[in-house]
Image 1 (cartoon, helix red, strand yellow):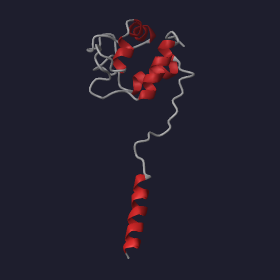
Image 2: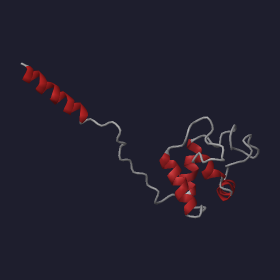
Image 3: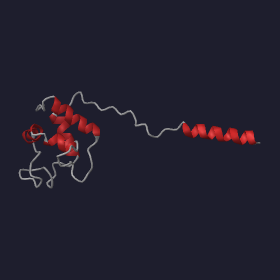
Image 4: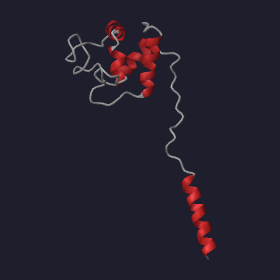
Length: 120
């Protein structure tokens, strides 16, 4: 009887020990064909950055506009765009009050910046 109980406990222990919940799923983030017109504007729009209470329009309450390529490029040039979305020290974390952007979206923005932030 003790042998059966001990065997059962060992099997239970090995079954539980074999379970792993700390492994992240293998998610692929394609940063090979990032464009301003399709990728970057989509990311900016999806996080609500162009709303009237943030960076939309000619006189946005946030202090600067992200409406259009030239406005976005200016924030790339001064480092504020990537600093803000990556929550880097010394920058105001964006999007404000929403938590950090999805890492894949951050990677896409970085790839676009690294490619020279082309107007494509």
